[in-house]
Image (cartoon, rainbow, N blue to C red; front, side):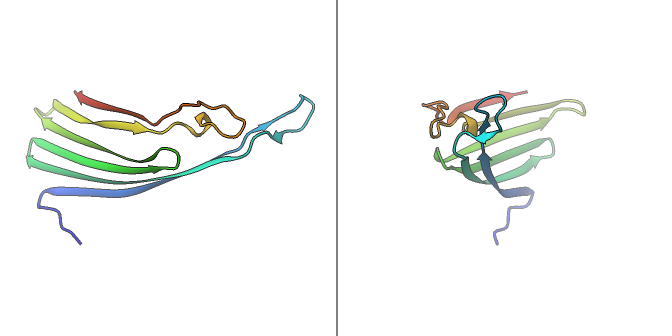
Length: 131
């Protein structure tokens, strides 16, 4: 098993999303509910790593990455790098940068006779923040 350098903490994890959606409707107000569309489902998973170090007692650095596998949009990875400075007992300065990414909701996807959003794509953007 690999050891992290002194003063560095690590975190690793996995995520699994198993989504299922069923749609029901009434042909008329006095009729019972019936399944109106075939069932939608998808399974997505992700793996992430993050490291945190404090090279100085007033500075904390964080770096992390995540790999996602989405049934519809394929594999993609994202990262985040951030710094935190403890300026005084009441003031902290933060800065971070990294791309954001996300898949559409299950109800937004085209499926069978349901229209959904025909050209739905995985969302992605780069961002930075300082506070």
